[in-house]
Length: 51
Image (cartoon, rainbow, N blue to C red; front, side):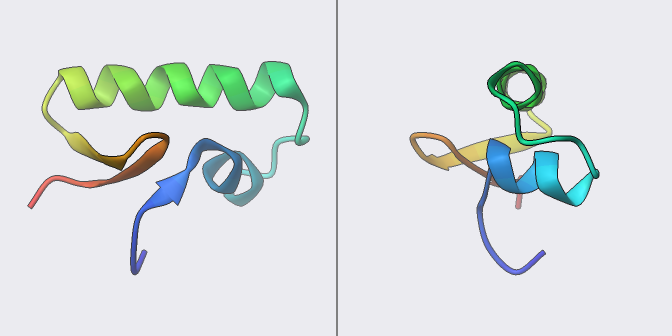
């Protein structure tokens, strides 16, 4: 990973179909990881590892 990823990119990397329900599910998980201080949200909708 070289930069922030969007939920759509993560969904695609995991091999899930790019359906709204799948993308929203991944986005919810990414937001949960932000709350757990594992990830950070660089811009709205762009997630990256905590430094």
